Amino acid sequence: MGYEWLPGLMAILHGAEPVEVLQALDNPRRWPRRMVDQHGNVFVAIWSRTATDRPIIVVVRPRPGLDATIVAARPMTPAETAHLEQWEHDQ
Image 1 (cartoon, rainbow, N blue to C red):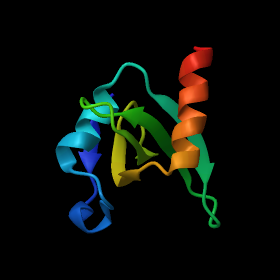
Image 2 (cartoon, rainbow, N blue to C red; image 1 turned 45 degrees about the vertical axis):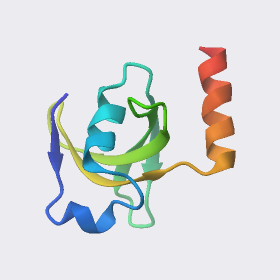
Image 3 (tube, rainbow, N blue to C red; image 1 turned 90 degrees about the vertical axis):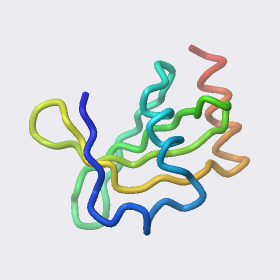
């Protein structure tokens, strides 16, 4: 899968560095979760970890084919991290 950065992305990275986004997307143990916004737009929230094991969520918008546009990223909350850890344990 190829990823493209949304123009102006640096404005919507909330507490996550670009390198961390790429690390999380490259992590083989990532948990994609489908999202639909109030307008019916489909996104995928990828719950993953960086190379330093930091849990973050990267939101991408699927494009035709196997590509996606990176639209946002942020660290997980403690509750989200606990949910991710449960998913990791169950895998």
